[in-house]
Image (cartoon, rainbow, N blue to C red):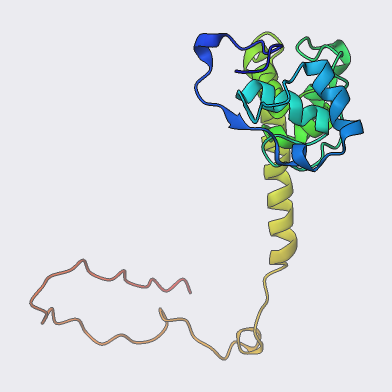
Length: 195
């Protein structure tokens, strides 16, 4: 990577990426402090993925979508350690959203989707996080069956059924079965008269 402040080991850089698209559209007063801080040489047009992400964060855009970040985390804030508050919010997120990492990351504003997912897998047993996901699944199943019951409604009876004018297929006289078919099949169940 041609950027001097790059922290990526030289052997790990696979492919250089062009600087973020927004980079060339910026005015010098916005671009110069970033150039100075990250020590980006003037002739550099490409960088490694890690530097690309650092620059994109400084520009206030999401590196993958190039859309503005909703909550911008200051560069100096340590985001790798989980505070008790963040853990509590993540647990609440697991209860409410299951393993929907996008929604959980939106709740824990200082963590990314990947960090939330890693938190879950790293602390899964220690903090019994599986039980929180099961709570979410049970809640969703309960809501789903409740919605099904609401849409189904009580069974309805037609006017004919109510007056007793219709007969079931068991009450009809069936013609005798002569087994005239070339292929034998199981016999049809016989109706038993319950009267």
